[in-house]
Amino acid sequence: MDWEKILDSLAQIREEAAAELAAARQEQQRELWRVKYLGRRGRLAQLTALLAEAPPAMKPRLGQEVNSLKQHLLNLFQERRPTGRPEKGQNLSFPGKEIFPGCLHPLTQTTRLMVNIFVRMGFGVYTGPDMETDYYNFEALNMPADHPARDMWDTFYLNEQHTRLLRTHTSPVQIRVMEKMKPPFRIVAVGRCFRRDPLDASHSPVFHQMEGLMVGSDISFSQLKGLLIYFCQELFGSETRVKFLPSYFPFTEPSAEVSISCVICKGTGCATCGRTGWLEILGCGMVHPRVFRAVGYDPETVTGFAFGMGIERIAMLRHGIADIRFFLQNDLRFIRQLSGSR
Image (cartoon, helix red, strand yellow):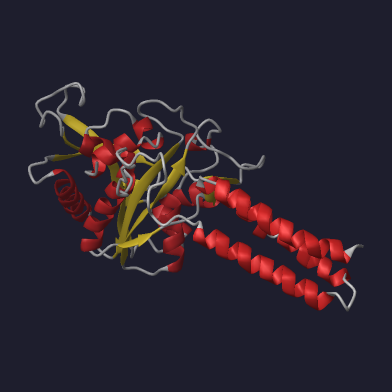
């Protein structure tokens, strides 16, 4: 290899690099120049790699010249970096990009509001796994193998044996908590749920629930009513009326559906409430003795109540949202409108 020729080429590289950098008017062009000459695989890096093959007599001189060239090019590049002054042809009259402040999703806002009401009443907050077993999702909650809720059209099963699934409600959290805790206690469970429902204005295969559980001695249905009336009026206003109607749930007995006076027509009757003046928002009841037995509690000495509701349903009523799909479309206009930000 002709090392003298390589040494002579350094001066040519110095001139070419200076001319190319002087012609680079845009930041992108300057960056390409930096990569070409000073990058990890640039011309200076290639020359540095050649030093290992140079004869001992040439190495000191070659090393000195290459380092001098490198420092010279670095200085040139630093001098040509932008100083904050507008480049020629740059129009500073154009408006800048508007920066919007971040905001919480409406479902997050609604969840926190609901949770805070129960936390003020002494409830702890728990979550659980999205992927559940048949035992926690159905069997321990007094839903035997022939229960309609196990139908494959309602549940996302994860194996052919139907032993693992995506939870259809947050009630499995109640079982997991009761297995680990001794009464008395009161908790709410929040999280995502999954059902094989069509995606339309009022249904979604993915949704969110909040469930509550209070267990102790001498827990009564009247306590349940008082707690839920307080919750509804804190959430929808002190003038909200609350109605309990008998219902059926496999994990509570007796059970009830809870309705509030329509938030749109104030109970006079409109299209939203089907002209009835009432809107159903949650289900509740006293914990079934079989559920207590499944977790090792004695239903003769332990009593308790449970309740559950859809968070999307609550958010839609509070904000007058007509379509559940709005929560899933990530439309920033929708999120900002409900959050109060621009």
